[in-house]
Image (cartoon, rainbow over all chains, first blue to last red; front, side, top):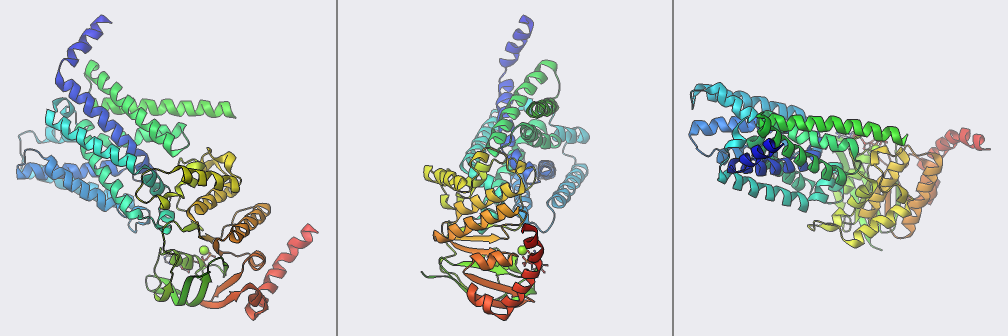
Length: 284
Length: 246
Ligand SMILES: Nc1ncnc2c1ncn2[C@@H]1O[C@H](COP(=O)(O)OP(=O)(O)OP(=O)(O)O)[C@@H](O)[C@H]1O
Ligand SMILES: [Mg+2]
């Protein structure tokens, strides 16, 4: 036990561990807030789709030779998110088909660019790191942390300010339009916030695991709770707790951060499934 | 009592193909208009046009009072609500107050109070914390009606509000709507129920075969050829029910 505490103390004397913890918790919070909306809007897969877009954008950034690729990744991802989500419930082209198109296209393009113009010797290693984010959270710079804090504050503030509108637009877009509310404006706001979160989350868990971070806390919360507000609050709590536990575990056990967090999320999901079964049995 | 809405020679349709044309009618504040017509005659399309969800192909629609945000309540025929959506009854009813909020991020005390009184008016106060998806069809209809009422201070558009309700609930709903109308709210309702329509409504708009068959007061409608023909139809259809009750 003393060993454990000493080890923990040692790790927390390094600033990069603190950076990882701050960034991890913030991203977990942000992605869970919007996760509920996205799952309900049938956009569960948008996390994965947009992350592939971001991957393609990173390849372009590497090609152009930008050192800080946020400047090119962010705008491209935001624009893709807007194109996908803008149409809302009344889309003529099916939402999942559009996501699949953009996602596959961007992934192929990005990989091709990386192969044609290798920016470093180890292409497959780069791809792997980009997709799984295995080490990037432990190599964060102070500037990354500041960007992350600023964007999280923007996302959380926007979510709180537009909470009632986000609920209404997610629940029944046509009713809102009929009563004179500009549903498209709020769809646009949701789209922009989503894009911000996903670009943020890429640094933490990597592209392929972003979807899990968006989906699992929301689905877990929906097992137990029946109102929108309680689902949102619960999914935020679940997400932050899992991220914290996951980061500690990965530091202590030396496992990859991203996948550890997701495994924690999956365990909690099954726990909640069991709990909801027990509660239902009792009520019957 | 001013004109709420004036439609002159309106044609409606989707992407070039006309569904119904030659609609001429006028709605005055405090009216109770019932829109009759068979399946596919364009009743829901007309309601959506009145709400501005789709534009008429041709004709003139003058709406001095319908445009203002926070005046209109709407009960759609089919909602796009998903089955697994976690939302409590109170949250849904309260969302009817959203048009009043404008840019303000939170609901005021008065708006929350309005949601409560509307719920008790519709007898769903006990359901307030229940999840929408776990309610029966009739209860769900009441919740959506409560939401529409919160949004509607002046006008209420209802697209087949009684579908799926049991006879008792249908009657209660008709009585409630009629009560609301007496308290000054303009009602525009789509219905297939000839008997109820002619009993409660002050005006009838009958659409058929791609054009307007009748518009006028209920009394005129009952005396007209269209009305007589349909009352005969409705009469023969209802005979079975009547003998059941007797
Ligand atoms: N979104 C749409 N796109 C194209 N055509 C449509 C659309 N919605 C309805 N229509 C067509 O318009 C016509 C009128 O439809 P509408 O829904 O207004 O009928 P309705 O009078 O409400 O019928 P019901 O009694 O069944 O509710 C139908 O022939 C239908 O096929
Ligand atoms: Mg209809």
